[in-house]
Image (tube, rainbow, N blue to C red; front, top):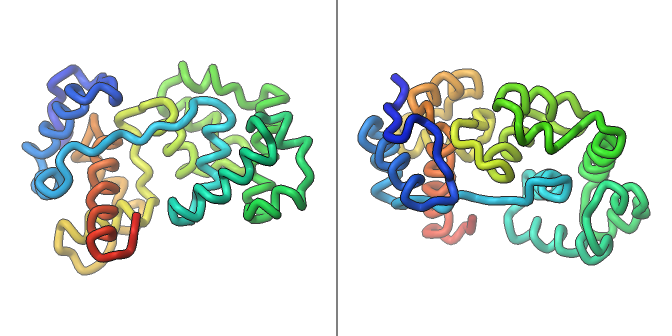
Length: 222
């Protein structure tokens, strides 16, 4: 059953008071969220730039530790000066490889850069669109999958009810908190997340914060 919203659903996730209300609403309505809340409190909402650079950064960070990705992205920023569609397309492929970026990721950020330059992807339009329409425009671009689209909407645009249900970290955190033996596969986890509406993005941050806290406690890092 969807969580009852204390603020009509809409919240400014950068406002700690509003985010705290959403977290407490989830904790009151769901034992899993209550357990996560007891462990990590109110998690900080992750924020990224709401432009091409923010989207490219999300691509660069995929499937890497925060530390490793940060090192690679720092080199990219030094190489390019400013991360823009034009600077990425003008950059030498081997120079980007030398920063530590994989060939597929370079192909992805270049494909996205081309889409932005051509107007096929309009990030200002995406920012004004509904979650569903924004997701559709993003995933229509080669190099942007559903996970990347969802994370951009959450981190860069502050969308509080977007849920990246294929994220292994989220499903593993849920498994750990619930005591279940196996992680929910993506389609099942999407259904699981329905109970957290209209704050599925907030629930995701709670689950991420929980698993990162556990990993840090176990010496594995975030």
